[in-house]
Length: 237
Image (spheres, rainbow, N blue to C red):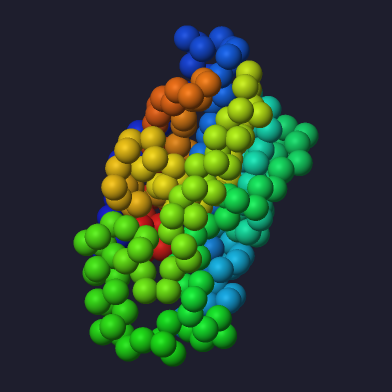
């Protein structure tokens, strides 16, 4: 797979037409930086993999981009790749990330042996077939050992909606995961699919929330990493 140069849209986070967030909460849904994997990593380790070297660079670039933005709070998944990314944002604002357990990523292999790697469980041809079916279906339940998908959807939507309620009058950053962001977007758009967009590491998706209303302003803005990453690596897809 060759690397492909992409163009990316960017949003002005200091929109002059929005002087305040009175009566609403602006959610910046952010995917964590790239995680560090190794060949045939045991599934139990892969669940909470740390940031890679590139992931740290992405997280720092995100923090620098948001340093001058009005940020009232930073929420994060408990997984360390998300927490460490959140710290890079929060430190510019004198904040401590607020951990929310229900923001953790869907566990695609929860019911598989956790001491085994994928190549211990499947042949390469079998893995190719699984990934092709997932790409075709665009649904989490296409994974053979995935956690309860309906429960995942419910916890994600409830967690983000709760943050929106708590954050009325503010802009808040929610550092989480690609599956979490896609699931929330799927909920907002009423889509039957779980995977709508390939969310880039540290990209920003902006949603404004007021009572039960939601408005999506932008999806997958990763312009801040372009100076350090001019193309998408396989792991970012």
